[in-house]
Image (cartoon, rainbow, N blue to C red; front, side):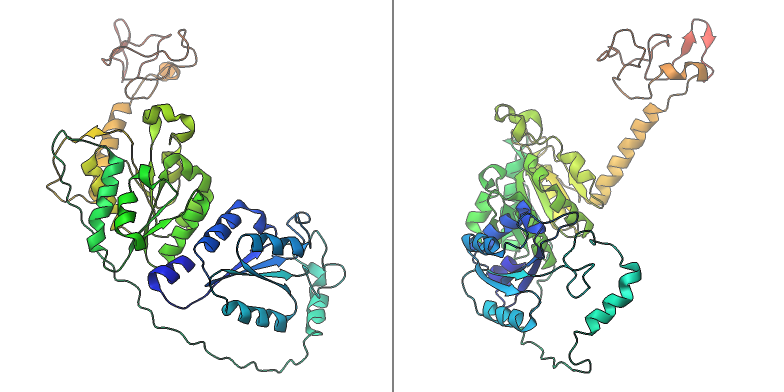
Length: 440
């Protein structure tokens, strides 16, 4: 959000991030710190609450606030050390951070967990997320004793702000210009679709974020032609997804691209995007085993399962360049989390274009129709005493547990077969024994 406000909206606002000392041990925190420092996000103020205690024990550095200061200074932050219980000191530090230019700011606040809650609770392990039960009344009285003027009325001064109008919702279109039988990869078709969005992106809603793979994901030409709408996130996938969530919160349409395999590093953040119902588009390239010599570490194999598990997500797996461009267009015009799966090898374009209007609802209808046909083939009725030997499967099937030929055996024929006690079948048998009707 800080990046979006500074470089796209160009407004003078501030973002505050409250971070626990235990949370600051996560890798995502330091990915974000590098990103904020690199792009000089002086509209970002981080507050690190160093209260020493974690959920089940003490934090790694406990109250060693000097080390926290050194770490954030090393990452390029303007750092201030404050007493987290001294309100005037905190206000002065925030005012100084507000006047900082050219670098993000960080307040290291030393605090005591359960301050003023009494000797049995303050700065002690074992109270994380637990009710105080019988100690509640004494704790409330202890806190009230520290209030100097209970009738004080604090003056509220509204901050000066700029009126900002969020960008209008635009409709994006593509016109695939591939020839029949032309060889083109779906990843390059995705890049061509982005280039077609460029002239239509009047209000800068479409933005592309990439993890230093833009040459492989084919969004580099878009970044070169429209640098304001392209963000290089480097090899920090967790922060890239979080940054995209910030873009979506500012009503932008972020396309997030990298190798499909690398999205597994940021699945926690992807899941939060889905649960937050944000409008983020993920594009994973180099899927499946087709990338060959790059090896299994680069092959996107789990990505389909990952994204299909996100509530409300839509997964596109285009088979050719034309359908890849249409998938990109459908995703750009739909609100929600989408995943477009692209491949590296070039595939043949079976048709020059799509003459009729394709919508996600029509694609769902085609999928449901196909599923009903498959389910129809799977509806096998057999005699109860022979049911344990039959597989309700379409096409080639796995053997039953008692199959004498072991794992991997498959029928060579797709024609209906006679049922035998030692050989399972995948379709309704015409007869279970010679001369005997199956009863189905």
